[in-house]
Amino acid sequence: MGFGGESTGGDLDALDRVLADARGVRVREMPGDSATLLVERDPVAVRALREALRIADLPGFVCMCWGDVALDFFDAAERALTTVTLHHGYSVRWNGWPQDALLADGVRSLEWLAVRGVFVPLREYRAAEQRQAEADRTARRWVAEIPDPLTPYASLFLDTSSTGGGLTNPQITEVRALLVTAYPNPVDRILRLCTWNAAGTGAYSGYPVHERIPSQFLDLEQRFDFAHAVDLADPRATAGAVRYLLSWDTRKRLAALLSALSPTGRHKILAHARDAESRRWLQRRIAGLQ
Image (cartoon, rainbow, N blue to C red; front, side, top):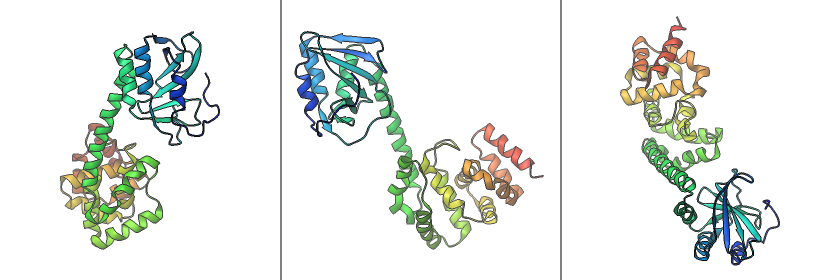
């Protein structure tokens, strides 16, 4: 059955009423007419799956993927009733609604599959849970390093990873005004920003978007103040300075920043590069200044 169709007007129970006549289900891989993974005709099992597909909400979103598996329901005469696709253990797609629906307890359907030998959707769900838990832990550590005057903006900062963009220019102006008031000495301000920047845990480029925010403020500082800050930096602030120098958006001013560093500052950033490849990259850029 194709996706789409006419909306039931947001009726959360519409799918359940259709499934009341279900006496069996064929589970197959997505997308398209892929291999059948299992066929279940036991009425108790089919009823349990129906209960696992209870809907909590129709929030108006559509998942961009095909889905984990398709569930082709049929009646007692083996006639096709409808098809539902499961998405990541939290939503379903059905042609009775114009958008995906949130499951009241999505993991139940994945457990139903796993009991019958279809393990991959539940395994991927658990792996995604672990990744999210780790992301939450690293985000909390990053938030803990936000300079005190900026802590009211923590949610705004984290939201940039959902929207995919950094702070807007008006937001940067507003937040930086608080920074300058709290840390009027530019070297002190840069050291605090570098310490915050060191809390980033992703790659030097391509890390979670919110981890780019300290760099947005470092971009506004003078290169000789940055060089002085590196001379005074403790190991953590130095690590944050290295992250800044190696971030993708900093490369347009990298030569100017490296040129301003003292010999001691250059030695410190090389010593605090977190891997040999990053160290060699910085060494080549510094050598190119000669």
